[in-house]
Length: 47
Image 1 (spheres, helix red, strand yellow):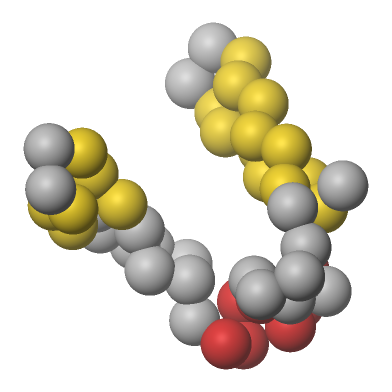
Image 2 (cartoon, helix red, strand yellow):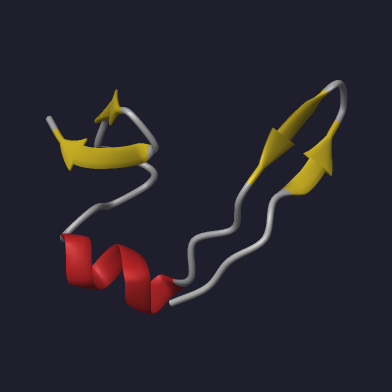
């Protein structure tokens, strides 16, 4: 799946669709995530 970054104030963000969040079993109103990076790869994990 390809996504683009969008400007958010002085930062950059990315929109996650409802389907993407469901696949990751993430509720954006309740859950926290951990973001890790290794070389050129980002990994998002539900905490």
